[in-house]
Length: 344
Ligand SMILES: [Zn+2]
Image 1: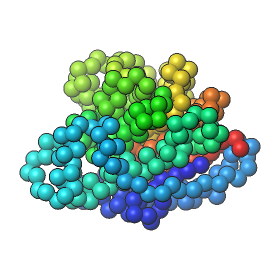
Image 2: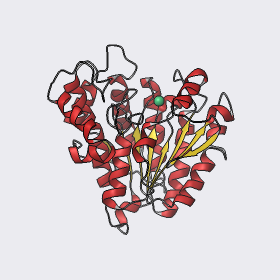
Image 3: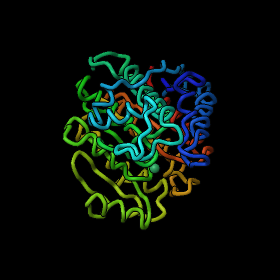
Image 4: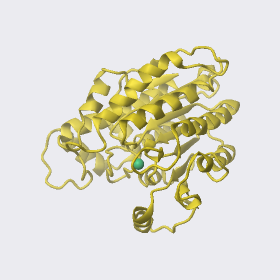
Protein backbone atom coordinates (compact mmCIF):
# COMPACT_ATOMS: atom_id res chain seq x y z
CA UNK A 1 0.00 0.00 0.00
CA UNK A 2 1.25 3.48 -0.89
CA UNK A 3 0.85 6.78 0.91
CA UNK A 4 1.58 10.41 -0.03
CA UNK A 5 3.29 12.71 0.76
CA UNK A 6 6.50 11.50 2.42
CA UNK A 7 6.73 13.11 5.90
CA UNK A 8 9.36 15.86 6.07
CA UNK A 9 9.77 15.83 2.27
CA UNK A 10 9.53 19.02 0.21
CA UNK A 11 5.84 18.47 -0.64
CA UNK A 12 4.78 17.75 2.96
CA UNK A 13 6.75 20.79 4.14
CA UNK A 14 5.08 23.00 1.49
CA UNK A 15 1.60 21.76 2.39
CA UNK A 16 2.23 22.39 6.09
CA UNK A 17 3.61 25.89 5.39
CA UNK A 18 0.40 26.91 3.58
CA UNK A 19 -1.77 29.16 5.77
CA UNK A 20 -5.19 30.61 4.89
CA UNK A 21 -5.22 32.89 7.93
CA UNK A 22 -4.05 32.73 11.53
CA UNK A 23 -6.29 30.32 13.46
CA UNK A 24 -8.21 29.17 10.36
CA UNK A 25 -9.91 25.76 10.76
CA UNK A 26 -8.20 24.43 7.61
CA UNK A 27 -4.98 24.33 9.58
CA UNK A 28 -1.51 22.84 9.07
CA UNK A 29 -2.18 20.73 12.22
CA UNK A 30 -4.70 18.66 10.21
CA UNK A 31 -1.95 17.45 7.89
CA UNK A 32 0.56 16.99 10.68
CA UNK A 33 -1.96 14.75 12.48
CA UNK A 34 -2.73 12.78 9.32
CA UNK A 35 0.97 12.15 8.62
CA UNK A 36 1.60 11.15 12.22
CA UNK A 37 -1.33 8.76 12.00
CA UNK A 38 0.12 7.10 8.89
CA UNK A 39 3.53 6.71 10.51
CA UNK A 40 1.89 5.09 13.54
CA UNK A 41 -0.44 2.79 11.59
CA UNK A 42 2.13 1.45 9.10
CA UNK A 43 3.48 -1.29 11.41
CA UNK A 44 -0.12 -2.38 12.14
CA UNK A 45 -1.24 -2.79 8.51
CA UNK A 46 -2.39 -6.34 7.74
CA UNK A 47 -3.48 -7.80 4.42
CA UNK A 48 -6.61 -9.91 3.88
CA UNK A 49 -4.80 -12.97 5.31
CA UNK A 50 -3.83 -11.02 8.44
CA UNK A 51 -0.18 -10.99 7.35
CA UNK A 52 1.83 -7.80 8.05
CA UNK A 53 1.74 -5.62 4.94
CA UNK A 54 4.62 -3.51 3.64
CA UNK A 55 3.81 0.08 2.81
CA UNK A 56 5.76 3.03 1.48
CA UNK A 57 5.46 6.68 0.53
CA UNK A 58 5.57 7.75 -3.11
CA UNK A 59 8.06 10.32 -4.40
CA UNK A 60 7.19 14.00 -4.30
CA UNK A 61 5.79 15.51 -7.47
CA UNK A 62 4.33 18.90 -8.42
CA UNK A 63 1.30 19.08 -10.70
CA UNK A 64 2.32 20.57 -14.07
CA UNK A 65 0.46 23.22 -16.06
CA UNK A 66 -0.80 20.44 -18.35
CA UNK A 67 -2.13 18.51 -15.33
CA UNK A 68 -4.00 21.60 -14.06
CA UNK A 69 -5.50 22.28 -17.50
CA UNK A 70 -7.26 18.90 -17.45
CA UNK A 71 -9.64 20.21 -14.77
CA UNK A 72 -9.35 24.00 -14.97
CA UNK A 73 -9.54 26.67 -17.69
CA UNK A 74 -6.61 28.43 -19.35
CA UNK A 75 -7.71 31.73 -17.73
CA UNK A 76 -7.72 30.09 -14.31
CA UNK A 77 -4.20 28.74 -14.89
CA UNK A 78 -2.96 32.13 -16.16
CA UNK A 79 -4.07 33.85 -12.95
CA UNK A 80 -2.65 30.99 -10.84
CA UNK A 81 0.74 31.58 -12.50
CA UNK A 82 0.60 35.33 -11.88
CA UNK A 83 0.00 34.65 -8.16
CA UNK A 84 2.71 32.00 -8.19
CA UNK A 85 5.17 34.54 -9.58
CA UNK A 86 4.46 36.91 -6.72
CA UNK A 87 2.33 39.39 -8.65
CA UNK A 88 -0.01 41.37 -6.43
CA UNK A 89 -3.60 41.14 -7.72
CA UNK A 90 -6.05 43.35 -5.83
CA UNK A 91 -9.10 41.20 -6.50
CA UNK A 92 -8.20 37.89 -8.11
CA UNK A 93 -11.06 36.77 -10.34
CA UNK A 94 -10.37 33.05 -10.06
CA UNK A 95 -8.73 32.89 -6.60
CA UNK A 96 -10.66 34.79 -3.94
CA UNK A 97 -9.04 32.65 -1.22
CA UNK A 98 -5.31 32.51 -1.71
CA UNK A 99 -4.32 32.81 1.94
CA UNK A 100 -1.73 35.01 3.59
CA UNK A 101 0.98 34.18 1.03
CA UNK A 102 -0.20 33.29 -2.50
CA UNK A 103 3.29 32.12 -3.52
CA UNK A 104 3.34 29.55 -0.69
CA UNK A 105 -0.29 28.61 -1.34
CA UNK A 106 0.14 27.99 -5.07
CA UNK A 107 3.23 25.87 -4.38
CA UNK A 108 1.29 23.82 -1.78
CA UNK A 109 -1.55 23.41 -4.30
CA UNK A 110 0.80 22.01 -6.96
CA UNK A 111 2.28 19.69 -4.30
CA UNK A 112 -1.19 18.47 -3.19
CA UNK A 113 -2.42 17.64 -6.70
CA UNK A 114 1.00 16.27 -7.67
CA UNK A 115 1.08 13.93 -4.64
CA UNK A 116 -2.22 12.42 -5.73
CA UNK A 117 -1.02 12.08 -9.35
CA UNK A 118 2.16 10.31 -8.24
CA UNK A 119 0.05 7.96 -6.13
CA UNK A 120 -2.16 7.35 -9.16
CA UNK A 121 0.88 6.44 -11.24
CA UNK A 122 1.92 3.87 -8.59
CA UNK A 123 -1.53 2.51 -7.76
CA UNK A 124 -3.35 1.33 -10.84
CA UNK A 125 -2.22 4.24 -12.96
CA UNK A 126 -0.85 2.03 -15.71
CA UNK A 127 -2.68 2.20 -18.98
CA UNK A 128 -2.45 -1.59 -19.19
CA UNK A 129 -5.26 -2.98 -17.04
CA UNK A 130 -3.79 -6.46 -17.05
CA UNK A 131 -0.77 -5.74 -14.83
CA UNK A 132 -0.89 -7.81 -11.67
CA UNK A 133 0.39 -4.97 -9.53
CA UNK A 134 -2.48 -2.68 -10.35
CA UNK A 135 -4.90 -5.27 -9.03
CA UNK A 136 -3.24 -5.43 -5.64
CA UNK A 137 -2.62 -1.93 -4.51
CA UNK A 138 -4.37 0.71 -2.48
CA UNK A 139 -3.28 4.29 -1.86
CA UNK A 140 -4.04 7.21 0.43
CA UNK A 141 -3.01 10.84 -0.18
CA UNK A 142 -3.29 13.17 2.81
CA UNK A 143 -3.01 16.61 1.30
CA UNK A 144 -3.95 20.25 1.76
CA UNK A 145 -5.27 22.55 0.43
CA UNK A 146 -8.28 20.32 -0.25
CA UNK A 147 -9.94 20.55 -3.65
CA UNK A 148 -13.50 19.32 -4.08
CA UNK A 149 -15.20 22.76 -4.01
CA UNK A 150 -12.99 24.19 -6.80
CA UNK A 151 -14.73 24.51 -10.16
CA UNK A 152 -13.15 24.77 -13.61
CA UNK A 153 -13.07 28.56 -13.27
CA UNK A 154 -12.81 29.32 -9.57
CA UNK A 155 -11.05 28.13 -6.45
CA UNK A 156 -13.53 27.83 -3.61
CA UNK A 157 -14.03 27.06 0.06
CA UNK A 158 -10.63 26.16 1.45
CA UNK A 159 -9.30 24.76 -1.83
CA UNK A 160 -7.17 26.01 -4.73
CA UNK A 161 -6.94 23.19 -7.31
CA UNK A 162 -9.45 20.35 -7.61
CA UNK A 163 -7.06 17.51 -6.75
CA UNK A 164 -9.49 14.63 -7.22
CA UNK A 165 -10.84 15.99 -10.53
CA UNK A 166 -7.30 16.42 -11.89
CA UNK A 167 -6.56 12.78 -10.95
CA UNK A 168 -9.86 11.47 -12.36
CA UNK A 169 -9.44 13.37 -15.64
CA UNK A 170 -5.82 12.18 -15.91
CA UNK A 171 -7.04 8.60 -15.49
CA UNK A 172 -9.83 9.10 -18.02
CA UNK A 173 -8.07 11.16 -20.68
CA UNK A 174 -4.52 9.83 -20.47
CA UNK A 175 -4.96 6.26 -19.17
CA UNK A 176 -8.34 5.47 -20.69
CA UNK A 177 -9.84 4.47 -17.32
CA UNK A 178 -13.44 4.48 -16.23
CA UNK A 179 -13.47 6.23 -12.86
CA UNK A 180 -15.90 6.23 -9.95
CA UNK A 181 -15.40 9.07 -7.45
CA UNK A 182 -17.08 8.65 -4.05
CA UNK A 183 -17.17 11.87 -2.01
CA UNK A 184 -17.73 11.40 1.74
CA UNK A 185 -17.17 15.02 2.81
CA UNK A 186 -20.13 16.55 4.69
CA UNK A 187 -20.36 19.31 2.07
CA UNK A 188 -21.66 18.90 -1.45
CA UNK A 189 -18.54 18.99 -3.63
CA UNK A 190 -19.95 21.28 -6.33
CA UNK A 191 -16.52 21.77 -7.84
CA UNK A 192 -15.83 18.14 -8.69
CA UNK A 193 -19.18 17.82 -10.51
CA UNK A 194 -18.34 20.94 -12.51
CA UNK A 195 -14.84 19.78 -13.48
CA UNK A 196 -15.89 16.28 -14.63
CA UNK A 197 -19.05 17.42 -16.43
CA UNK A 198 -19.20 15.97 -19.92
CA UNK A 199 -16.68 13.16 -19.35
CA UNK A 200 -18.83 10.04 -19.36
CA UNK A 201 -15.89 7.89 -18.21
CA UNK A 202 -16.29 9.52 -14.79
CA UNK A 203 -19.18 9.16 -12.35
CA UNK A 204 -19.32 11.00 -9.01
CA UNK A 205 -21.41 9.71 -6.10
CA UNK A 206 -21.45 12.69 -3.77
CA UNK A 207 -22.60 11.79 -0.23
CA UNK A 208 -23.20 15.02 1.67
CA UNK A 209 -25.36 16.30 4.46
CA UNK A 210 -24.74 19.86 5.49
CA UNK A 211 -27.61 20.94 7.66
CA UNK A 212 -30.15 23.72 7.76
CA UNK A 213 -29.69 27.03 6.05
CA UNK A 214 -26.38 26.12 4.47
CA UNK A 215 -27.82 23.23 2.51
CA UNK A 216 -30.79 25.28 1.36
CA UNK A 217 -28.46 28.05 0.20
CA UNK A 218 -26.13 25.67 -1.61
CA UNK A 219 -29.00 23.91 -3.35
CA UNK A 220 -30.57 27.20 -4.39
CA UNK A 221 -27.27 28.61 -5.68
CA UNK A 222 -26.77 25.53 -7.80
CA UNK A 223 -30.31 25.76 -9.14
CA UNK A 224 -31.15 22.35 -7.78
CA UNK A 225 -34.02 20.87 -5.89
CA UNK A 226 -33.56 19.46 -2.43
CA UNK A 227 -33.98 15.70 -2.33
CA UNK A 228 -32.46 12.60 -0.78
CA UNK A 229 -31.09 11.52 -4.14
CA UNK A 230 -30.61 13.60 -7.26
CA UNK A 231 -28.83 12.95 -10.54
CA UNK A 232 -27.34 15.79 -12.58
CA UNK A 233 -24.51 15.89 -15.11
CA UNK A 234 -22.11 13.04 -14.21
CA UNK A 235 -23.16 13.15 -10.56
CA UNK A 236 -25.45 11.30 -8.17
CA UNK A 237 -25.84 13.40 -5.00
CA UNK A 238 -27.18 11.81 -1.82
CA UNK A 239 -28.18 14.01 1.10
CA UNK A 240 -27.86 11.93 4.29
CA UNK A 241 -29.44 14.65 6.44
CA UNK A 242 -32.70 14.03 4.59
CA UNK A 243 -32.52 10.30 5.34
CA UNK A 244 -31.92 10.88 9.05
CA UNK A 245 -31.15 14.26 10.62
CA UNK A 246 -28.59 12.67 12.98
CA UNK A 247 -27.23 10.23 10.40
CA UNK A 248 -24.95 7.60 11.94
CA UNK A 249 -23.16 4.48 10.72
CA UNK A 250 -26.52 2.73 10.14
CA UNK A 251 -27.43 5.36 7.54
CA UNK A 252 -24.04 5.56 5.83
CA UNK A 253 -23.70 1.75 5.76
CA UNK A 254 -27.33 1.24 4.69
CA UNK A 255 -28.99 0.74 1.30
CA UNK A 256 -29.51 4.43 0.54
CA UNK A 257 -25.83 5.34 0.81
CA UNK A 258 -23.36 2.41 0.72
CA UNK A 259 -25.92 0.39 -1.27
CA UNK A 260 -26.04 3.19 -3.83
CA UNK A 261 -22.24 3.26 -4.12
CA UNK A 262 -22.09 -0.53 -4.59
CA UNK A 263 -24.69 -0.34 -7.34
CA UNK A 264 -22.66 2.44 -8.98
CA UNK A 265 -19.67 0.05 -8.98
CA UNK A 266 -21.89 -2.48 -10.80
CA UNK A 267 -23.51 -0.10 -13.23
CA UNK A 268 -20.56 2.20 -14.06
CA UNK A 269 -17.99 -0.65 -14.19
CA UNK A 270 -15.04 1.53 -13.14
CA UNK A 271 -11.44 0.37 -13.33
CA UNK A 272 -10.39 2.99 -10.78
CA UNK A 273 -12.17 4.19 -7.63
CA UNK A 274 -11.20 7.51 -6.01
CA UNK A 275 -12.51 8.42 -2.55
CA UNK A 276 -12.75 12.12 -1.69
CA UNK A 277 -12.54 11.67 2.07
CA UNK A 278 -13.72 14.55 4.21
CA UNK A 279 -13.62 13.69 7.89
CA UNK A 280 -16.04 16.54 8.57
CA UNK A 281 -18.91 13.99 8.33
CA UNK A 282 -17.35 12.24 11.32
CA UNK A 283 -18.81 12.33 14.83
CA UNK A 284 -16.80 14.88 16.81
CA UNK A 285 -16.28 17.36 13.97
CA UNK A 286 -18.30 20.58 14.48
CA UNK A 287 -20.51 19.82 11.47
CA UNK A 288 -20.33 16.03 11.71
CA UNK A 289 -23.13 13.52 12.14
CA UNK A 290 -22.89 10.28 14.09
CA UNK A 291 -20.76 8.63 11.38
CA UNK A 292 -17.78 7.17 13.28
CA UNK A 293 -14.15 6.62 12.27
CA UNK A 294 -14.91 2.87 12.40
CA UNK A 295 -17.89 3.52 10.14
CA UNK A 296 -15.64 5.25 7.56
CA UNK A 297 -13.37 2.20 7.73
CA UNK A 298 -16.27 -0.24 7.23
CA UNK A 299 -17.69 1.83 4.37
CA UNK A 300 -14.39 1.98 2.50
CA UNK A 301 -13.56 -1.65 3.29
CA UNK A 302 -16.86 -2.83 1.78
CA UNK A 303 -16.26 -0.83 -1.41
CA UNK A 304 -12.63 -2.06 -1.56
CA UNK A 305 -13.86 -5.67 -1.15
CA UNK A 306 -16.20 -5.23 -4.09
CA UNK A 307 -13.29 -3.64 -5.94
CA UNK A 308 -11.00 -6.56 -5.03
CA UNK A 309 -13.53 -8.95 -6.55
CA UNK A 310 -13.51 -6.89 -9.72
CA UNK A 311 -9.79 -6.09 -9.65
CA UNK A 312 -10.16 -2.33 -9.26
CA UNK A 313 -7.47 -0.11 -7.67
CA UNK A 314 -8.74 2.24 -4.94
CA UNK A 315 -7.18 5.56 -3.87
CA UNK A 316 -8.33 7.94 -1.13
CA UNK A 317 -7.59 11.67 -0.93
CA UNK A 318 -8.19 13.96 2.04
CA UNK A 319 -10.74 16.75 1.66
CA UNK A 320 -12.24 18.47 4.75
CA UNK A 321 -12.33 17.53 8.43
CA UNK A 322 -11.25 20.18 10.86
CA UNK A 323 -10.46 18.51 14.17
CA UNK A 324 -6.91 17.17 13.97
CA UNK A 325 -7.66 14.35 16.43
CA UNK A 326 -10.64 13.24 14.30
CA UNK A 327 -8.52 13.34 11.14
CA UNK A 328 -5.90 11.23 12.92
CA UNK A 329 -8.47 8.58 13.95
CA UNK A 330 -10.10 8.56 10.54
CA UNK A 331 -6.82 8.18 8.65
CA UNK A 332 -5.94 5.21 10.88
CA UNK A 333 -9.25 3.40 10.28
CA UNK A 334 -9.25 4.08 6.53
CA UNK A 335 -5.64 2.86 6.18
CA UNK A 336 -6.36 -0.37 8.11
CA UNK A 337 -9.53 -0.92 6.06
CA UNK A 338 -7.83 -0.42 2.69
CA UNK A 339 -4.88 -2.65 3.63
CA UNK A 340 -7.17 -5.45 4.84
CA UNK A 341 -8.57 -5.86 1.32
CA UNK A 342 -5.18 -6.46 -0.29
CA UNK A 343 -4.53 -10.10 -1.17
CA UNK A 344 -0.92 -11.00 -1.92
ZN1 LIG B 1 -16.28 19.70 3.92
